[in-house]
Image (cartoon, rainbow, N blue to C red; front, side):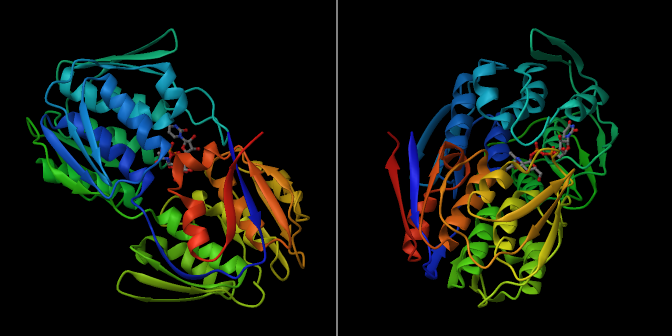
Length: 418
Ligand code: EPU
């Protein structure tokens, strides 16, 4: 296993380029099940979760070749209709094959994902929606078994905004008979990117990016070429890295409009943000001001940036109140941030962070993907050395983060753990 060693105290400077979005790429890869033929996906990030998705698709019979950031997925001759426990427990997003498999083959068998470090994360709304489209669903031996002759359009009103649930139903509905309306749908940019590839494939979708998505089922889809949108959370993590080190960096290949909620908050904290085309300049202040954060579905403040902003608040002037409203257990980074000398008290879903003058580097342990990013940020701002272990979480979702940070002048290296 690898760990990261960070010598803090360097102000970041220079240029960094954002990779393709993990959370857009995963459903986009899976959507190729719906379009028999050779699909070409561009701007693909090199990540462990992408490898897992490739394994899932290969286990279904897809033929896949990679060349740099381009991945070609041939789904002409799929034979399987099952995602096993081994794959789903490694990556929950594998459950998204349920809708497309059901749509293409009329049957699917997919392991239930089980628990997760950040919350229970059930898939009840995925299943309820598929039932509304006419699927017959049973749960047996830890697996969801789903069957349907041809799915039929329906009106589905989500109890809560769910990104995965919206993606699942969108993919199931594109070839269903008649019209499907998804109400209280998630509005995340990743949903729009998925709708874009499905539309290129021949799907008829209106309203992606709003809370009402209308889908008119078509009988079949064709293979296409599509480039994945930039990763907004990776971009936000670099913005926060500039802020926490008092640095001055330029971020390339990012969509600033996908990060409005974060940008407003960083500006309130005293960070200067300017942009020209897709290059964004981020300049940290001498001392960060405290801000309050409530995580919300898009366009609200993203839960995937909560841990990183908490790291930033540990050295802010004053106290900050951060409430997590999406996942019930997404404060695992708190006890690790305390090891840097941070002052944080958690009560229910709210953390109160009192800014301290400086952080002091320490050995810490990553607990999930975004928690890992927050520990790196704290390490960059600390006055001495930090060791972050268990970074396999990080490799799931950040492409070469230590190389990108080193390119900005950070002293950070990856070493093998004893
Ligand atoms: N939920 C249910 N029932 C369902 C589905 C969701 O109760 O059937 C609940 C969840 O337990 C959670 C809330 O609804 O409390 C929102 O979950 P959502 O379905 O929106 O999340 P997800 O699709 O499982 C995606 C991202 C997460 C990101 C969330 C929220 C992917 C692969 N994952 O998860 O990304 O935090 O949306 O924006 O797209 C990450 O990248 O670190 C990450 C965890």
